[in-house]
Length: 192
Ligand code: UDP
Ligand code: MG
Image (cartoon, rainbow, N blue to C red; front, side):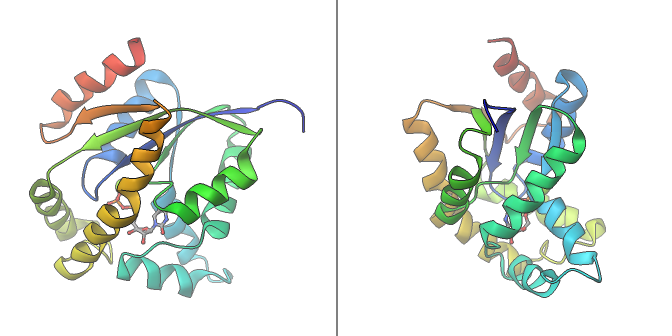
């Protein structure tokens, strides 16, 4: 393949920081295609024929991270099938394995134009996820999984954000406010 064919914005932040909510708004207003790595994994887990379903299930429950070969393949497939070029990739890359795997397969194919970081206090994250857990049916919106997710976020995902910060790609958004207030700040990133 010659030339970069995709433009990507990564969207990162703790569990419950509002990545999915804000991505939907960005998709509506700015026409990016929103791909949630977590949603793609949950869909794959539900497919009876999937050879990865048990592995995915276990990682989600434990708040650990699925091997990049699986996640990156799902992302690539969704990108290709969309027929579009501009993507918001939500909840990925979450650790060094994710980052390396992405770079190895997507270098020259996709350009990371920016990383939006939703910066949210842990207490707010926990409160939002527990509230969401009452109706989300998600296997990991409970106290036990959440502690592990937050641990993984601090240990493994924060260094990825710092890596992109060193490349001057990070746009910080303070995410403790309500969704409209946060989106007002998000819009400023797109008008820069
Ligand atoms: N996950 C993963 N790799 C990814 C994205 C998600 O392994 O690239 C798994 C991981 O176990 C994570 C869970 O899926 O804890 C839920 O991720 P999601 O992004 O849906 O959660 P959020 O951060 O939005 O609350
Ligand atoms: Mg999400």
